Image 1 (spheres, rainbow, N blue to C red):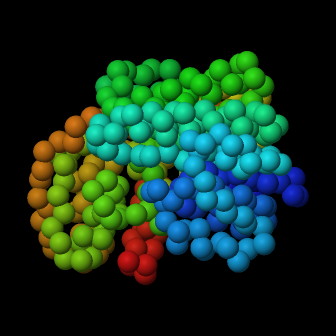
Image 2 (cartoon, rainbow, N blue to C red):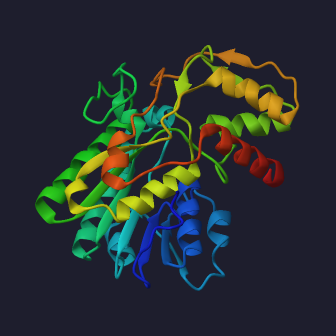
Length: 324
């Protein structure tokens, strides 16, 4: 189960972009633990230097401070690389509504630069982060690839554009691309601070600090919260996926459904606090319910997630207790 048994050639070199971020740094750690080489790329605009410093003593790790909006940087980063795990992007639906031009440059042009560099440098597989936000206002559950609705934010649009460009690069330019539609990933090293922080780490930090969290909306929105270990598995298995699966996008989730209000009260219980939340307005551009059909990823990538929400949230709480 999981990714521990995944095998690559002995001196395989992975390029992880967005390596100073939450998902990127966890990918670096997992690959190094498996004994392979990692080249990390990040401009530190949203990632943390501390996430880079964790691995600087490892001889198999190399860090490049650079921006994916610069094609020359992407070309240098892809030299001699076997597998690209492209996580570099700006997240957050609300922030994308405030900064549409930047999101276009960073998330679309930046990803396109990475694909072009990977193609020119002969990279074997290009795996990139997409998002469940591409399902837009499609109400049907579970969310299934090929049944998408109207996009509800510039962020969602950038991810959909990345998927279309990836399809073109597989079709015309011989680059095997695999898009991973992440559903609400959580786990160690996810930043609890800032206006755009993800809900689980934010709630945990506020409750540990004795603050009153605010839930956007009525708390009855549901999400397919997915522990970081499952995401690592999907990325590594996509690197070994057959050419026939290239040019496509895949849901990456556990396949469960958790309601925000239930998570909130579960956290108060686990942390031993008795704090009632505030309720704020719905967030603009948000999807009310999200739950993934992961059968396509199971079938074509061999993805078989074994970290349930319950198991993952226990591990996450322990990590935050020790590290906040």
